[in-house]
Image 1 (cartoon, rainbow, N blue to C red):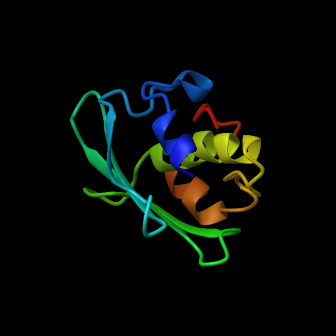
Image 2: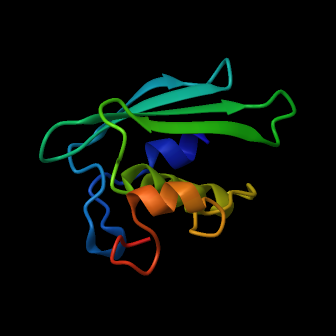
Length: 120
């Protein structure tokens, strides 16, 4: 998990849409507790999103939360970020499913979904 977070590239453009262009900061690296927290910033308005990952005691699974601090909608940014991070986790052997219209229909309905230009 630590490697996926530290090698994350802010400013990635999945589907041509900029994600986290303002950069990010790892607040808690989880090295002792298995709890990771990072803050991601949008380029234009400086909005902050929070990401939290807790690796379960067995070390084989984790709980994840990614959320905007302001507002109700995120225009798919948290989903895109999680999909980028999950791709890195899969490279390390984790089972990390992607967020799709089928797996998260309500989120995609509110924030955009694959195939509608949202760049998933």
